[in-house]
Length: 114
Picture (cartoon, helix red, strand yellow):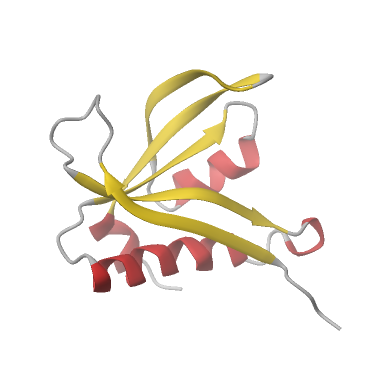
């Protein structure tokens, strides 16, 4: 049978301290997709759900934030395709690697067709 193929944990939280124009945000804490089903748009679906459900619960939230490993180019490519942009480097976020803070303004993502 099919088990868990991916998960996404997120929260509504304050915006980042370096961006005073963002008072609150939907913050993706962790997202992962099983290796064998990558490329099937499961990560994209989960991120769209974060935005859609987040906007239902918090209608005035302006953006989605996440951190991604500096060396995780496939994930960065997905996020960029969905409209995320790099906003800051987080040095030594991981034990062996820096991370990028990435931000998505919610309007553009929700208008893209599935």
